[in-house]
Amino acid sequence: MKFIDLQEQYRRIQPAVEERMENVFEHGQYIMGKEVAECEQRLADYVGSPECITVSSGTEALRLAMMALNIGPGDEVITSSFSFFATAEMVIHVGATPVYVDIDPKTYNLDPSLIEAAITPKTKAIMTVDLYGQCADYEAISAIAQKHGLFIIEDAAQSFGAKQGKQSACSFGDISCTSFFPAKPLGCYGDGGACFTADPGLAARMRELANHGQVARYEHASIGINARFDTLQAAILLAKLDIFDDEVASRQRVAKWYGEALNADAPYVALGNTSIWAQYTIAHPNREAFREYMSSHNIPTAVHYPRAFTQIGVLKPYFTAEQQACPVAERLAEQVVSLPFHPYMTKEQVDEVADKVNSFE
Image 1 (cartoon, helix red, strand yellow):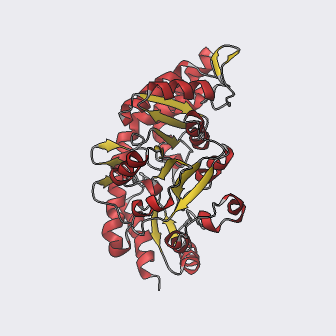
Image 2: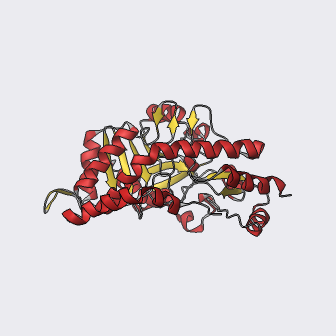
Image 3: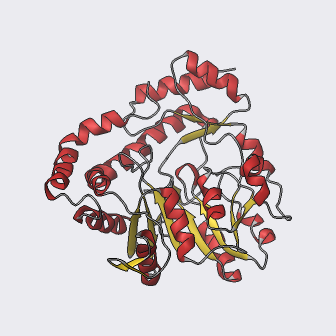
């Protein structure tokens, strides 16, 4: 059994991928080719965002967002204590200080009730994280951000395709960022990412910064970075977007099968949220023994993520003196385990995994 099956997906879209890539080979515009602009329009339309700027990775999307918002030395960015390392890493890269807030024990997303206690005169933004595929509580977080005059940067690396009410992930932030890493719900065949915004000024700024600060060829208006999205990867995403709605429906079907089979062990999805199930993650108090048991039955598992940010030594020099404890994140980091999940799983495969989960003692 595979943890994720990208080969099955490729077999389905192989003719479209090959045709799209052949078109790139024919025109030869491997950097900023026409497919990039086409991909950005398709992504913006899907999200319902006026502007989409594709970039070289989800990590660079976060850095670009903070650069565009002039976040840097002396600033603090409140963020989740439980996410992939890049969330904290990019705050540090721009010279700002990440301030970690504990997570909701059900959704594993940033706990809005703890945010205001972490706000200081140095706070400039709240960087939310839509962990495991469901959106953070944007109604509550947006109210806090508006009250205190803070930016929201939505780290939607795991939630492209998810919804909160009728609104799509990647549309809740002043700038929203996502990733097209191959294992994501919408992934390319390499690194890739995107920033979304409703602000045309911020969009223009990000386009400039992502291309070495250029406003025209060899005219550099700012110190930027190279975060350009590859034309071949844009071509691949365009092929995948043609089947994405169908894959979203399949992911919901697989998640439903899991939920029915696992009962109380199924992940919690908040009222009003539609998760895209970037990972199907449960919590187990005896994780290592559980993983060994599953492995003995040839069922792969993974851990996303084994430590909270407050437990990672290399991050500790960047803690503020007022850094809150994050006991929920630290406890769950020792328990979370992700099960095989992809849109091409059969009910028999789901039942096989669930049977072993239920039988472990």
